[in-house]
Image 1 (cartoon, rainbow, N blue to C red):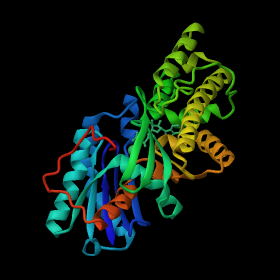
Image 2 (cartoon, rainbow, N blue to C red):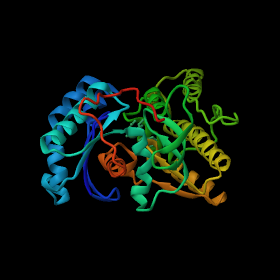
Image 3 (cartoon, rainbow, N blue to C red):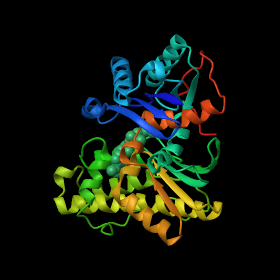
Amino acid sequence: MLVLGIETSCDETSAAVVRDGRQILSNVVSSQIALHQPYGGVVPELASRHHLELIDSVAREALNDSGVTLDHIEGIVATYGPGLASSLLIGLTFGKSVALARGLPFVGINHLEAHLVSPWLSAQRDFAPNVSLIVSGGHTILVHARAIGDHTVLGQTLDDAAGEAFDKVAKLLGLGYPGGPEVEKHALDGNRNAIPLPRGKLNDPDYDFSFSGLKTAVLYWLRRRQTCTASHLPSPVLRDVCASFQQAVVDVLVGKTIAAARACRVRAVTVSGGVACNGALRDQLAAACAHDRLELFVADRKLCTDNAAMIAGLGWHKLRAGLRSPMDLDARPNLKLE
Ligand code: KG4
Ligand code: ZN
């Protein structure tokens, strides 16, 4: 079955055609990073206006790239939450409209549930019971995923998401947006043990996260040095701050994920979301999984960040199971993974 997926939950306008929930025929992602860069974060009004301008051409491009036409598409799926209300509405309304006009089945997709399938799409492997870390700018969630549609949220961040912490610390340091790639770049030649920083909740027996204390610790460290931005920091010190901060985040993410995998007695771990692009996280999670004889599935970088292929990938499972959403399905900005 050929499924057209649509994703506009935040600042990526994306459309994809996926065959049988596995074979990605096209995955067009138009990122708005440059648009929001001057503001140091996503501006919702700009994001939705941009989605509206682009959604039609992005969907056409996805069809062109896939080599099929709308006549071949057998189902349409679109993200209906969580995300920015005005952004979600664009993709959701577009998806519902095309489905209605073509008489095709339609299902609204939970963006977070789609993140759970992206590592399996990348690996071209059948889903296996796993512990999954979703780690992005908006979310840091640990999930026990037993099967598609059968999962339990083990824990999540109590304050900032990990990506948000990267973005805020980058801002403190006067680095660009988005902060994750900037911090990673500067951390490369830094000493990760240079500055002692807290590992929030690492040793607590639950699976929740907290990153706001870490961000504040970086702020206080900078204040003690009587400096505010990177322009006042000698570059070796900037590299050490970035490396120490990144290591603190990675220690917590890896520690909690492995603890959850042990407790749930799974053999597989997956990770997705924008922060999963981070090389230190990928390497250290791989080493920790190897130590515990766990198989690690990390989504390809293009499938880590927001994309419609994961929406279409999950959508195929929902459509095949006979699920259909009503045409009055509304956007759910605060939709949870349940
Ligand atoms: O999944 P995503 O594209 O969007 C959502 O938040 O849903 O994730 C974006 C987040 C940003 O906070 C960005 O700073 C972070 O992912 N990020 C990274 C890296 N690349 C992106 N964080 C750490 N290291 C990276 N290489
Ligand atoms: Zn996402």
